Amino acid sequence: MTKLLLMGPPGAGKGTQAVGLAERIGGVHISTGDIFRANVAEGTPLGVKAKRYMDAGQYVPDEVTNAMVRDRLAHDDAQSFVLDGYPRTLDQVETLDGILADLGTELDAVVVLTVDHEELIARLLKRAETSGRSDDTEEVIRGRQDVYVAETAPLLPVYRERGLLREVDGVGSIGEVAARINDAIGL
Ligand code: AMP
Image 1 (spheres, rainbow, N blue to C red):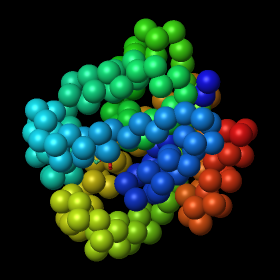
Image 2 (image 1 turned 90 degrees about the horizontal axis):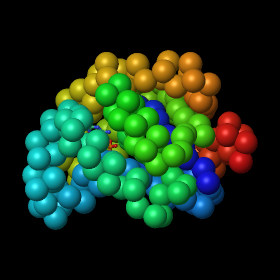
Image 3 (image 1 turned 120 degrees about the vertical axis):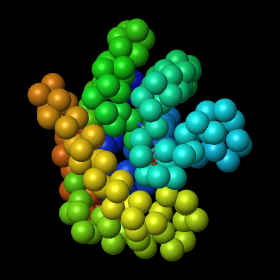
């Protein structure tokens, strides 16, 4: 059983890598962004709550996000997982610690993809041409990078101190980055 976090700024390729990594460990890919988008698409009460934050490129409030992740991690299929896009705040780190402690388990590693800031903006603008995502405008894209720096970058030292952080260069082909991730976590 392997429990991993995959972190990195918006545009670092987290989603793509998380899908492949989950397959390699025989676990599930849990993306809070995907779960929110599915709820928005279905018009559920959770989706209605989340939508205005997502459209503005802001984080959905912790209490909403935390409850959703607690539910998801309690499912039987979540013995091995790659968590993608969570935690993103220090409050979420504490909540995740509590959820995993309640389940009698802990994280094996936290992989962070590193990519240069301007490279990221360029990638996201390119994705915006085809994604149809309502949070893919230039202003929102820049704002999301700022939110990452302010709210999520501070999580990295926390996991570094715990000896869990594995920094991986996120620039390269999908296969190259996947191979680096495997090396970093000893797969
Ligand atoms: P993502 O696809 O991971 O970039 O997430 C898209 C959007 O969903 C984010 O910009 C946030 O509005 C929301 N979101 C996803 N994960 C979280 C989280 N852990 N905490 C708060 N908001 C989140």
